Structure formats: C-alpha cells, structure tokens
Image (tube, rainbow, N blue to C red; front, side, top):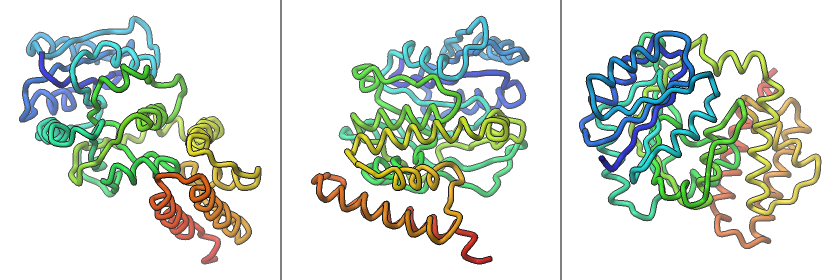
Length: 310
C-alpha cells in the first residue's frame, strides 16, 4: 500500500474516462492506490473501469448498484481510504503527470499544512486549453478567509491529510450543489490548505455536463445552498449583521452575483466595512486578512457593476 489514495467517483463518464484514468496511472509518482467508485453508471463506464482494473493492480474498483449521487459516493470513498493522503480526481478531467509527485513533496516539507491544491486550467471537450484558470491564490491564510466569499480551492487538484477528516468526522453534505465548497469549508476549521502556483488540474468544461444542466434548471436552489455556506462562515467568525446587511452579502456573493444600482453598492460597502469593524472588536486573529479580502471583494463587485457604465 502506498501513502496516497487517488479517489475518483464516476458516473456516466465514458467519453472522457479513459483519458482521466490514464492521466493518473501515468503519474511520475507511481506508488499510490487508485480508488474508483462507479455510481450506477448506465453507459460503458464500468466496463472501461474493469478493463483498466485487470491491467493495473493499483486500482480498487467499487460500484453502487443504483445511482446514489455524488455526495453519497464521495463519502463512501472517504470511508474506504486508509492511506496517509487522499487526492481527489474527477472522471472527465486530466491530471498533469507530476501532480502527485509535487503535491506529496510539498506536504512532506510543510507539516504544518493539512492539504494542498493548485491551479485548474480550463480545457474544452477536445482537451484543448481555453480561457479560464482557477484559483489564483496560494497563501493558506488568505485562502481560508476568502472562502467566506467564494470557493478558493479546485476540487480535482486537492490532496489532503486523511487523519483530519477522519478525526473530526467531516463528510460531504447531501446537497445537489457546492458539496466540495461545503466540505472544504468545514475541513479548513481544523487545518490550513495552500495552493501551488502551478497547474494541478486540467478542468474539462462540458456544455452538456451536470453543472451546466443544474445551473439552468435550479437557479433558486443553487442560491439557497450558496447562502447556507456563506452563513456558515459568518457564524464561525461571530459576525452579527442586520437583515439588510446579510441580504446584500448573500446576493452579491452568489455565483455571478452583483449589485443592481448605486444604493446596493453603497450598502455593500457599509456592510463590508461593518465586517471589518466587527473583526476588530472581536479581536479576530484574521483581522488584517479580512480587511484585505473585503477590499478586494468590493473591488470585484465594482467591476461587476455594469449599471455604472450604462
């Protein structure tokens, strides 16, 4: 058994699955366990996985007899992992060849950190690089504070120390959206995660993917779930906002959220200033970073205020 388990949930991913699997099997660091769980696929995904399992003894293949959903499958993977580290992989993405080598070396040299990720570079359905790189922050303290406003970790790039989620019973919540954002938010309460300033994931943008379908059909539900995560962070820090302040924060920091007029932008400024003032009153260790992040997030909202330029 190696020190790393690469965990990949699979559901109806036959089109890109072979490329994803091979990108893991061909890593420069070779001593890992490859845990794959098929979530009741109805296409040829399981047959493809069986083919690879017969060729490579590092693969452990499991199957949900019926489709249980990504959260159930991810939690099953967390429970089955028994190595020092777990590295997440998505079934339609591509891992750079040195991903595991670089992340393991980084964590071995930074014992104070609980995990590491990197930059996700967008690729299209043909594997060609397209505009879009996420995230752009490396500092683990900044990452934690910025998570109060947006997810700052690319799931398919992350490697974590397994003892932390096992010790504190951290699992994915059973929601249809942002399960990785919520999982990392809780994990970060017990340890810090850095990002390498390197591409650690080639993220496949698929027009027919589940994320796109969800975005179009369940916008209200998605917003409610986003709001729940943000409220989780406000409560952790001990912030107390008025109803107007909370509503402007939630509106602006949903995916693609923005102000719609001068009054809302002014309200957002006052609310972020209140957050900084409360952080000082509460004596929060993250005060300086909260101030920096609030300034940057306000600047982003000004850039999104298209009504200013009409």
